[in-house]
Image 1 (cartoon, rainbow, N blue to C red):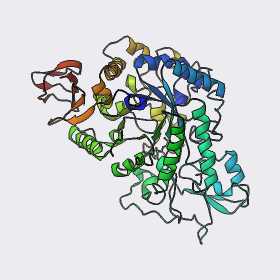
Image 2 (image 1 turned 180 degrees about the vertical axis):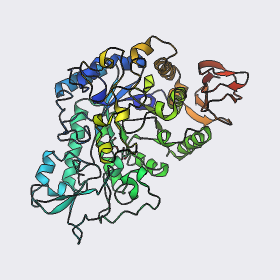
Image 3 (image 1 turned 120 degrees about the vertical axis):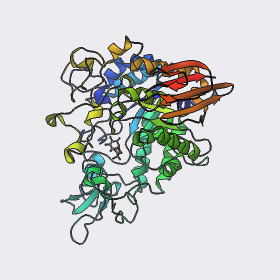
Image 4 (image 1 turned 90 degrees about the vertical axis):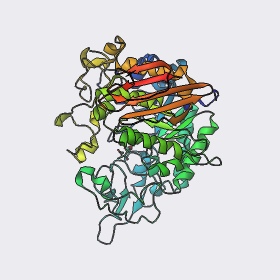
Length: 520
Ligand code: ISL
């Protein structure tokens, strides 16, 4: 009902802090920059911002390698800047979410420095250390997400340590209760500081099989898939004990009132659903649903996927949708400019909490990164397969001034190819722009409870058309989308047009790349 928790009707906006706004002229975005741009988020109409990691870090994986969980990296600012940003966000009615990175620390974290100092160090068991196999090789065949064995030999103590990602990102041993206690204190630290929730990095990775058996080899593997997929991550991820940890994190969030936990989980739907937990032991509020990122852009396939996901939700569980993030090619590049508009209507009219990736509201495309500008360690380790993530991390395109208004200096990554014409300033002045479309969609969600929190029901449709109805109380709203580039015959219940793009509906035909929202 109307008193649903804030995160159910909210739209979340993801900020990659290096790339949003630089305030001090070093070419890297920072917290003061985000604060200076908060009014963009207010004008857009989102409810919450999630900021990718801001903690002190050697930046081997741009902040997903944390060296101190309870401070701010000087490149991003200070704790005082963080408090100022939090207050400024809250003053505008915006919630603020941080990124919690519990699976691994930086190899420069004092905990790991202690752990690797000697086999007898009290912190030795805070990480995952194993003897070599009899041939001196790694303990098993587990492979890092960024390529190569997930085990790194430590010469001085004569054991291997486990890292699911870079060797600069050793995995914590969450089977050790001292690790659990220390990390739960990290959550309390930020909740007490006013953080409204967390996105939890690689939640499904946190616990590994205690026997460390080999993972099954993937018989269909080809190099273009990336080294990671040589094996199935059967024993290295998604172990049953992870659910106790998720429930423990949830219990802490609940100590602080209406806070939200979002789990980053790349698993098939039935497995994803288990991370909601149960009524007795709730886990994350929103296990990220990345299916729109993986799906073929086809009305029938996406229609089946939505219905399947809706049908699989446990009682009381709230859905969510994502079109892009800092690890995935941008939606405008995946489906093209015209369909990116249709995709925006889809993201913002499905049932559930949407997360919008910075720049997608102006239709930013993937950047083109010259070889000498590559920054992503994933690209540097496995070049040439399109696995690199720099293209979706280029600076926010604010205006047509120097460096797109992002910085007074050369940005850490090159600007996107179209920044001089595709930017916030240009689109703010054009009521048919992608930005204007996002503002309209977000205003409609605010004005119509059926869109914000109503039920979802498929409507019959054929060809490239996807159609559904949202209901709340007496309100019924119909959405129809043409996921193709030819006009499609479409029969819809009549109603008042709330929004129409790409030529809309006329004479029983939904135009190429068109979408309509009707109030019955
Ligand atoms: O990219 C992936 C899914 O298509 C996976 O390889 C990966 O497991 C997933 O993206 C995990 O990402 C998160 O953790 C990483 C970090 O590099 C990413 O930026 C972060 O989103 C390690 O912390």
